[in-house]
Image 1 (spheres, rainbow, N blue to C red):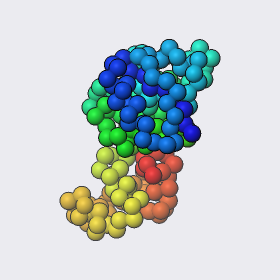
Image 2: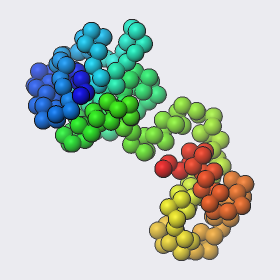
Image 3: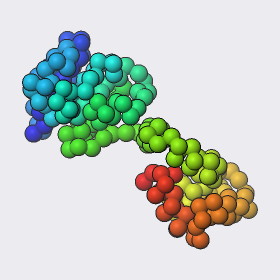
Length: 200
């Protein structure tokens, strides 16, 4: 059973979130408040918060519960600071009920819910020197080709998907192998995964 604390300044939003989670037998609402002042006293497993990021603060004891943050932004922006504050999922307030419940469930098991595009940005932000070095290794087109290679696509399929000639694909593959110091396509894909160029 996941103990959930709901935090939102609006009583209407809190009531809506309570109704949303009431249908999930795996969730018990530990409390519903206008802010996060009761978190340390109640020690919930997960906090479902419809608050601005600025209102999040690291807990005094250093043990933050997992936070599912409902943002007013249509496309909430992740940052390494938000992760340090305990946020494990960031959704738009317009997110479907199933998305919110799935995020709460994931956060309760110690997982984070991050869109793959946001994950690439987070990884780059957490290690800017490595990210800039990696980004100069392969061109954007070569990265596209490498990602399609990881999906097992043959040169003909890559050419069709990218709208380029098969000869151009062969050129890109040769360039990728040379730049990554790989002798086979499989080795290039493995290096790409290890270096974070391909997310699986």
